[in-house]
Length: 585
Image (tube, rainbow, N blue to C red; front, side, top):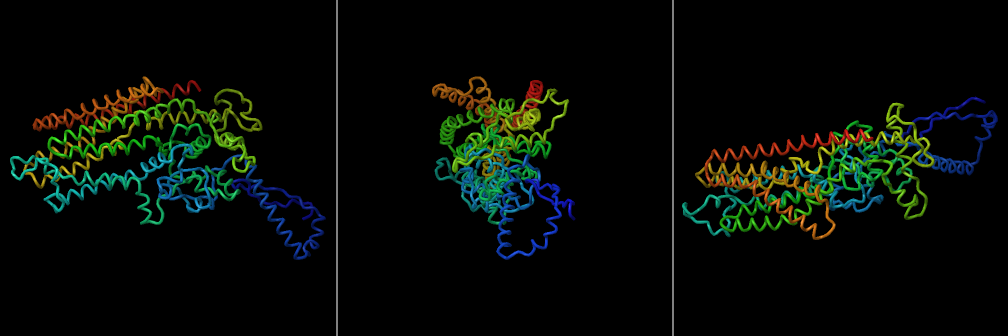
């Protein structure tokens, strides 16, 4: 084969694409082939060591010169970590971005991922834990707590077992005579005492409890646990094939914070999802602060429902103390969350991958620990976006601009602009419609008012103790209306009031102005709650069934109007904002 070309196949980069390389073979080499075959064992050993070294060097060179990132992934690199491991220790894996061999061994090989967790390492560890608990644990917490309330109802009711006492010893109004015993003494209380504890345990530990029964819970991608941090070549290949993890994920969970849209890698993860899936229907957008307030609402309503459970004159006093004592601490947290959510439109309008921050540029392209130079991530990401969002002559209608950075002549700035415009439109039309400042989902509102549903099961205990079935039925329906209509509509109006206040005054810097803003919003919150409950309480005391049913229908229609109107209004608002962004772009 002298003078001919021998074809060898070499795998280049993380995409493992097959590249044919022509290697000429000289006649002299073929003539001396027999001589080369007769070598000593020592020379053979040295030759093997040199070959291994050259092979290792070639791998490093392949990783370092890879121009773009791949949407495919090697099966030996595809790993996922059980969500129970991510949530263990109250999310201690989010303490720092550096990972070790122990973190990597916590992940397992897989062919499919339930979710890709996209987040920035500068946000709060506790808020990320609360956000993932809201996504993965809240449905189970709702179902199990309601089933426990039903079980406690069966154990309290005289119709079934009646083994649990439901008379409260601290209630002085209880009397054995039928005339002096109000109906309320026959209400149960165990669900209101036990269910908050059950909800809390399941809300925070459901995935860990589930992992005790099954070997692995749902697998998710978390960068420091699914990419080998100890092996240099595997780490680089894992980073280069980051988009491959997204292609194997059923959804992406965006743990949004104020820093999210300023981080380069976070933007790339959204770009990779958009490039491979074409839409954002499978994007779970979770504001970190909002996850905290959902659980705080459950605690708030639990204490309110417990205040309702007390009988006699002490009930009104204790309820008033709880309501007026818990509202002022709740309001500053609400204002803080609404203020952050109102920054979403401006963040999306100013969305730019060129202005995003990355760790390598922050540390001056030197490893903070070893001082060795590190490559810039921008070149890799910019070249990948140029490949994914190619420009034609008609798009954006402008000539190719100068390179965005020195040494990036192959990066088309117009492609990066096209990516910015595309993401702005999708985020404004979809994400903002879901998590705008006043876009509280009905599901989250019902989760917050779940304690009133628990109380309805305690109220239903009176069916076995009172002959007045109609009054007991009205009391049960009343609490269900409170849980599913009154509190969700009031919650929506309170959040809207907080957004309106933030639009007027923003976030005051002086302590006295901030205290005044908290006081005014607390007053508005109390007024909304009083006005929401007043019609129901007045008609309930009148005892006239037509008026009671009319108020129920009014409350149900109100909650439907509030949520549907806000949703349609936000769709029109963000559609107009999207058109404005397109014109400006």
